[in-house]
Each structure stands twice: as C-alpha cells, then as structure tokens.
Amino acid sequence: MTALTAPATRAGRLLWALTDGLTLIGRELGRIRQEPGELVAALIFPAIMVVLFGYVFGSAISVPGGGNYREYLMPGLFAMVTFTSTMAVTMRVATDASRGVMDRFRSMPMARSAVPFGQTGAEILNGVLGMVIMAVAGLVVGWRAHNGLWQTAEAFALLALMRYALSWAGCYLGLVVKNEQTADHLVPLVFPVTMLSNSFVPTGGMPKVLQVIAEWNPVSALTAACRELFGNPGAPAGDLAWPLAHPVPATLGWALLLLAVFAPLSVRTYRVRGR
Image 1 (cartoon, one colour):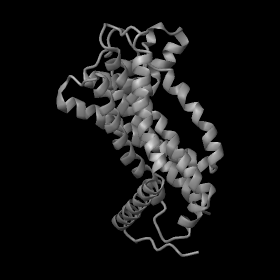
Image 2 (cartoon, rainbow, N blue to C red; image 1 turned 90 degrees about the vertical axis):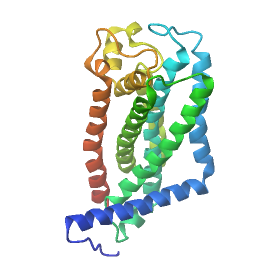
Image 3 (cartoon, rainbow, N blue to C red; image 1 turned 45 degrees about the vertical axis):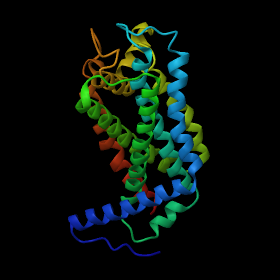
Image 4 (tube, rainbow, N blue to C red; image 1 turned 30 degrees about the vertical axis):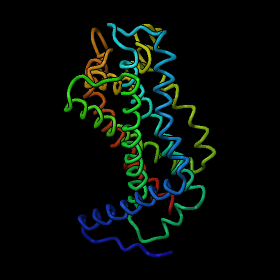
C-alpha cells in the first residue's frame, strides 16, 4: 500500500484535500458521461413529476387562500426532489464500497476527506442541472416566481444548500451500508418523509399527530420557504409551528445541522473503514 504523504501545515492539508476532491468530482462527472442513461433518468424524473402531480392532483385539491395549484405544487416538488436525491448519493457510495473502489482510493496517496468531498461535490452539480430542468418544466405548466430576481435566487440557493447538506447524509449512509442492494432497499423509506409534509396538501387537514410531525418535518420548512420566496400560493400564515412560521431560518438551521453532523461523520467513517 502506498504511504500517505500529508502536508505538514493546515493550509497545505486543506489545499491537498481540495485538489484531490476536485479530481474526484471530475471522476464522478466522467462516470456520468459514460453512463448517460442514469443522468437522463434523473433529469426526466422531475419533469414527469411536474406534469403528473400538476394535472392529476391539480383538479382535486383546493389551495389555501386560493390560487393556481401548479404554483402551489412547484415548491413542494422542488423540496421533494431535493430530499429524494439523498438516496442517489447513497447508491453511488455503496456501489463504490461494494466493488472495491473505496479500497483502491485508500491505497492511493490522497486526502482522506477527498472521497466524500468528491461524491457530494458531484451531486450538487447534478442537482443544479436538475433544478434548471425542473424549473423549465414548471414554467411550461404555468408556474411563475412573483417576488423578483433576488428572492427567486435566494430560494434556489436554499434548495442547493439543503441538497448539498443532504448529500453528506447520503454519503454517510452509503459508507455504512457498503452494499448497493441494501442501499436500494432504503429508497422507499424516503417517500413517506417527503409525503408527510405540506408539499402536496395543506397540513391543516391531517390528524393532529401527523400534523405536528408534518409541521416539524424539514421538507415542510423547505417547501414553505420556497413558497414565501417565490411568492407562490400557500405561503405561511396563521398559528403555525415555529418551522413553518419562520421557514427560511428553519431551513437554514436544518441544513447547517445536517452538515455539522454528517460531514465529519462521513469523513471519519471513511477513515475508520480503511484501517
């Protein structure tokens, strides 16, 4: 095994990790180019969701306070796709672990934090592309952002930050399960989390217990933050739980908490598994 030659200074180690991480981001993007079917499916899925939910549910659900259901729906779909992307990272990391790619990385003189950084960095680039396609699909079916360029940019930045934070959670899960079949079995567990929220229907009609869970669900906070920033129907109003009454700071808090927990956990798990 090749011995690690870590720089002596903190700045040198940081630059080392950054350089190796960028190399691995390039490796992930190169793998996507070699397997375009996976990318195409990932990009088409959000567009299908927009059309399917917008037109199937649109005629059956009343928007609180009135308004176009597809404008009410789009922030929820943005949030849903953001959270379900976690499992894509989990699958990629678990696949690398089960096929020995991680062991190969560990045998190379590269920064230990570079592998998780590369996986999560590639995910956010994919995520930005997916958001652009989804926004275009939304515009086609009638969705609009009404609060100007700055607040629209804030909403997309919030979505990107949450997606990046969740990618670290996905990276950690992939390192823990280390098996692509097991990771695949975890995928259905994400959908109840996204459905038990205000993404598609108001939480007011839910049973009390489910309503409390939905109001404290980070999916609901992200959805409410996007509705507020985009100026779409269903913006927070009335007597609500704190995360829904203050959705932007609540979403920022959730994202920073996820980063604080899962970034060090992912790096540590990658290091420990290599001993």
